Amino acid sequence: MSLHIPPAVNKLGISVCGDSKKDLMDNIKNHIDGGYILIARSIQCSEIWSKPSDWLKIWIYILQEVNYADNKLFVKGENFFNSKEMARECRVSKDTIHKFIKWAKSATLLATRKTTRGVVISVLNYAKYQSGESYNGDTRGNTIGRIEATQGQHRSHTIIEENKDNKENKEIKKSLQKKVFENEKNETQKKEKKSDDEVVNIFFNMAEQELWTDQAYREAKQKQFYELKKNDKEKILLKMRVANNAHRSSSSTTQLLAKKIYHETVGLIQDLSLTQFPTDATG
Image (tube, rainbow, N blue to C red; front, side, top):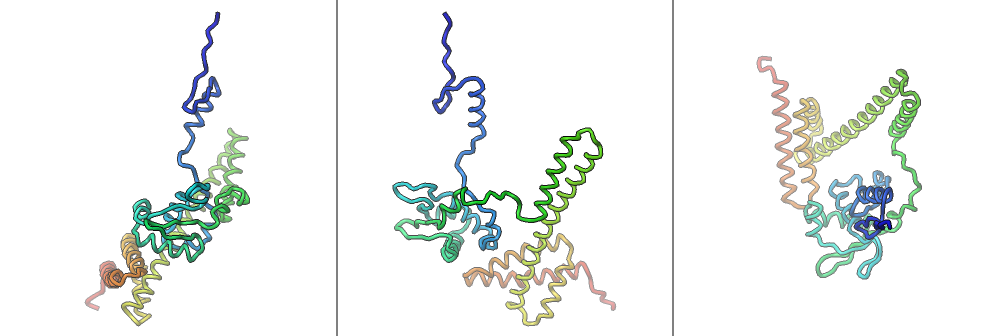
């Protein structure tokens, strides 16, 4: 009489054996806990993309925390929030939380209603943006450069797979990969330069209003900055970012701090410029 050996039972209470058991264990291993949210590619063209980076972090946090389905307390896209807890989870100040919510309401991203211990936030159009059926399935990149790069990669992969021992095709693959890398590198450098130039322009615009009335003097100082060594420019840029952020604050104390940083930074540009390009005292 043969013995009957029962199949293994996994943690979910499902009997599995052989290949089925292996497949199930692979699925469990590859499973990502916590669920997911959908982010539309068009977010790069939306207004929030040009706002402070912390605002985007808060927005994603809210999308994660609201209900994905109706329950007894809240409907889909809605949940209870406390500004203190939000600030802690997002690692930002409560003032930043309040500024974001005020803007998001004006931008019709969300609606709120106050409660005794916090606020109920409702994400508007949640069902539309969190449904895969709302998207047209276009998973291509947003720039022509990225599309061409991806097509180049696909072409090179096909050539190599069909002609593994062909030296000429290997060279083609190497050339295409190099081109893809250079294109991506150039795009990144352009974005970084544009971002830095915007910081510099905002800084000197504000400094001209706060410290000077002479545009020619402002242009001279800005020219001095661009002539500095790379390492010195990076240090100055950090100070400029701090000054710009402080100037945007609604606090009069913080705005006074911004004015002080303007003075210090312009003075530092002058000192570094004299150090790198000393004036000939005998001339």
